[in-house]
Image 1 (cartoon, rainbow, N blue to C red):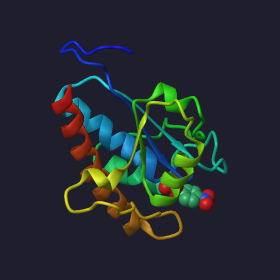
Image 2 (image 1 turned 90 degrees about the vertical axis):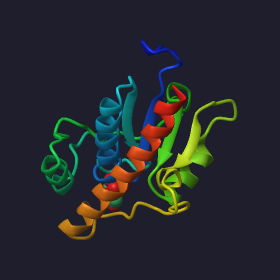
Image 3 (image 1 turned 45 degrees about the vertical axis):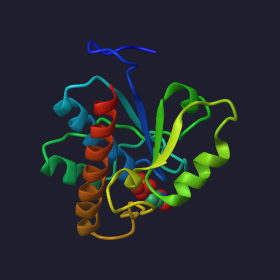
Image 4 (image 1 turned 30 degrees about the vertical axis):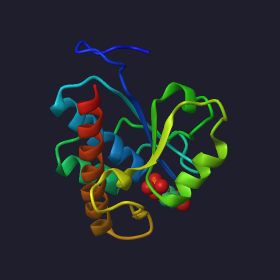
Length: 163
Ligand code: 4NP
């Protein structure tokens, strides 16, 4: 495992939702920004449990909300989560409870990746899902951004403190 200049193993985080075009790319972007701000090196990626959007860029509404907060995610491409991810990443973070259950079911018995729900990292929001904004309007994406930012900040604080 690579190491930080400050030392300690470099964490590798994978965010997982259903389609990998709305919530998990936004969580990936928010977490990258938080890690950068906190000044620690980290590998970050996102994936989906479904394959309908494989190879596609994020939903244009997700791209728009990210852009509004100064982040370009137009080059991200959707992919499916795979079993190797449980060895490559130190932390796999589900956006909702269905994603969590799917990940738990596919997790190899000897894999060391820590599996968690994103909102479990946020004080007072244990067990909450980041709601799927895909079938709703633009406003839902604003809520998604607020949720993933809160989750990313809390997770980055925890990992940064542990580094
Ligand atoms: P995501 O949103 O899981 O946040 O990327 C969705 C994207 C696509 C679909 C469902 C949810 N879909 O059914 O195609």
